[in-house]
Length: 220
Image 1 (spheres, rainbow, N blue to C red):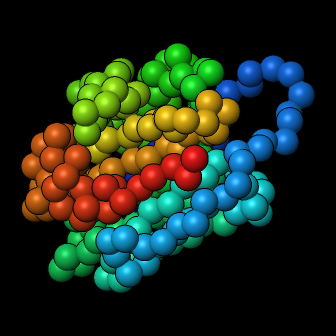
Image 2 (cartoon, rainbow, N blue to C red; image 1 turned 180 degrees about the vertical axis):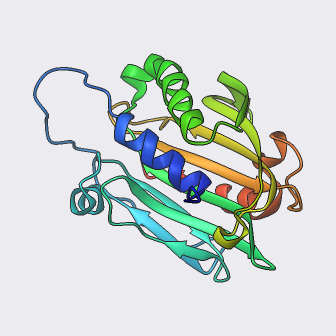
Image 3 (cartoon, rainbow, N blue to C red; image 1 turned 45 degrees about the horizontal axis):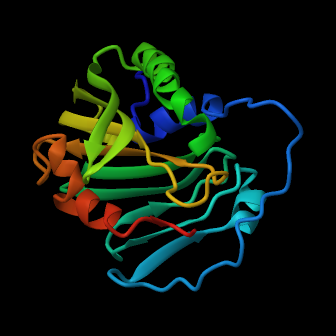
């Protein structure tokens, strides 16, 4: 039986199930203050998350917004793991993909982010042994330090699932800057060799991923 290969989705299934840290104590209701007014600035569509959305999806509370153009393939999973998945298809192949999942990483326990990424990538490699990991740790992304992993993989024989060729992958835990008790999201980027993204650094600004990710903001 052919193994299903859904790179960003598979990673989030593995990571979001395990990326919740037990920090002890009773769970308290969060208070992030008044919800700011959020409007589109760049693209036609916008996805907004607040405490109510998280409660409905049974995800750790956070607030963020991300914009995206009409032509992307959009999924809003109802699986108690993920927030949103965005794909760009070209000639029947997924060339770029962004998936945003949940975590309970905050400013208070950010030291746990890299050790957890190391454990989770090890689990991911069990599912896709061909995946080569090039980096796990802290590195600058768009001028700021972030916990991340970087890897690449060649996928053969899974064209019917939308994947073909060599892919760069990156997973990252960007932390909110002002709200210390706001949960961070876990984002994964996937880019095929024929996309505009030809290196890990290109994820910052190139292609659909660069343009869409530039609209992401925590609502603090």
